Amino acid sequence: MIKNIVIIGAGNLATQLALVLTEKGIPVKQIFSRNLDSARELAEKTGAAFTNNLSQLLPEVDLYLIAVKDSAIQEVLENLSLDENRMIVHTAGSVPMNILDGFSGNYGVFYPLQTFSKNRKIDFSDIPICIEANHPARLMELQELGEKLSGSVHQINSDDRKILHLAALFANNFVNHFYSIGERLLQDKKLNFDLLKPLIRETAEKIESLPPSDAQTGPAKRNDQTIINTHLKMLHDQPELQKIYRLMSESIFQFHQNQKHDLL
Amino acid sequence: MIKNIVIIGAGNLATQLALVLTEKGIPVKQIFSRNLDSARELAEKTGAAFTNNLSQLLPEVDLYLIAVKDSAIQEVLENLSLDENRMIVHTAGSVPMNILDGFSGNYGVFYPLQTFSKNRKIDFSDIPICIEANHPARLMELQELGEKLSGSVHQINSDDRKILHLAALFANNFVNHFYSIGERLLQDKKLNFDLLKPLIRETAEKIESLPPSDAQTGPAKRNDQTIINTHLKMLHDQPELQKIYRLMSESIFQFHQNQKHDLL
Image (cartoon, rainbow over all chains, first blue to last red; front, side):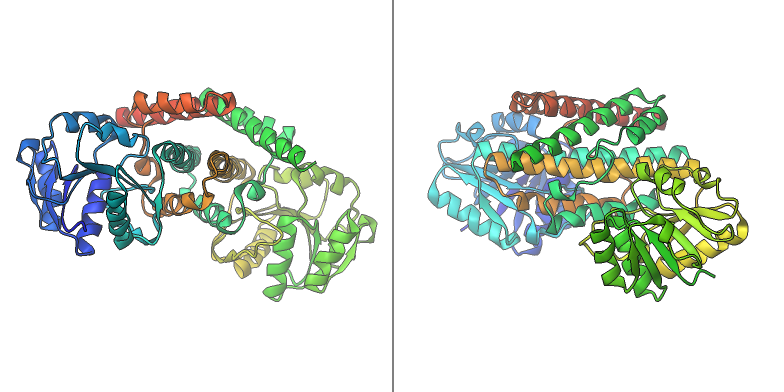
């Protein structure tokens, strides 16, 4: 059983994981960050030790959890020296587990499928936690750890996790960018972004009970070229938004055409 | 004061409006739809009369509310003959009020900014209702009517309503299409779309307290070309999704670069 943890990283995910682990009674012994202030700040919130030096990680801890941005994982690994029976996991959606196979010991992946911010407390109870490990016994340990945080723990291999991460990027990063575009369009006319919030809420809530392909409405789906052209004209001084608008409209139309064909 | 209403249309919006008006004690006297079955179905839910013939609209009603798709409004108007002191409104985001100025009498716009489905009951209480009228006294009547349904009634002119509609399209139509893309990516690998739902919820909830531009995360914002290229490769057999991915990533990066410059 995993009884204590070192967290490598002090960013959005590291912060939320450190907080929830502490809350659930699983001690976070130490926080590492290249930035000592960030390490200290998070350590203070969780009663952990802290360091900005990977060679000073506490040696006898059950789990070393890497929660740095994907592109920094390799560098962390190159500077890490752990007893070979220690377990190490990363938390990245798009990075295969085998990046860790230089460790002869125990390793795996612990990937919470959610968007995290440092200052926004997250309820972990329904967050899908995707786990993978190099050994069935280690997988069980990660399962147990996951279940302490969430009712939704899933064994997902590296290939499937990559797909999940890509789909999540559409459903979060790209979706949020459309919120930003909406915000900017309104700001330009001194209209309040709050006007869009009930719509944004309902759009997200609708797909709890309706597949998104059934929830689709709007001019693109019915190929209403009059409205589409009006909108393209309105965006004439923002060619990049025009391109996005055109491409999305074509994609929506094609998607629903194909669906119709699928039904024949 | 508007004491009774005829609804022209029996689609998603017409249905939800007929239901909420009835519920709030404002009688819907009659439903018109070109499709008699649709008219009957909605009429039965609301205790209204119904017809598929515009020349048979009840003559002495306070408000005639057009809730058909934008492209069908003109045709409705051409076949409508009302006493000149009757009031008529349309409910379309992208259609200017002056489409109604053939009516010498009283006219306006009553545009609820939300996504509607026939079978999903909508809570109107916080839906922004955007009103406009050809006369201050009529505007007051629409304000009063709106306030019976919602705590969020706004006087918005035709130009601003057009912008709201365009922004709403990004925040709803295009957002929902990304949910669909996420769903399809997962389905192709037999992964359950439910895995994305907590993320979708949180993405929408986050912007209640954080401007979307501050909520943005992900590889595009930090210009992480390694992940971006991995994803583009994963989409090699879906060139249309590749295009969307590339365009969105560029747009996110540019948007946040410009924001940085704005701060200098």
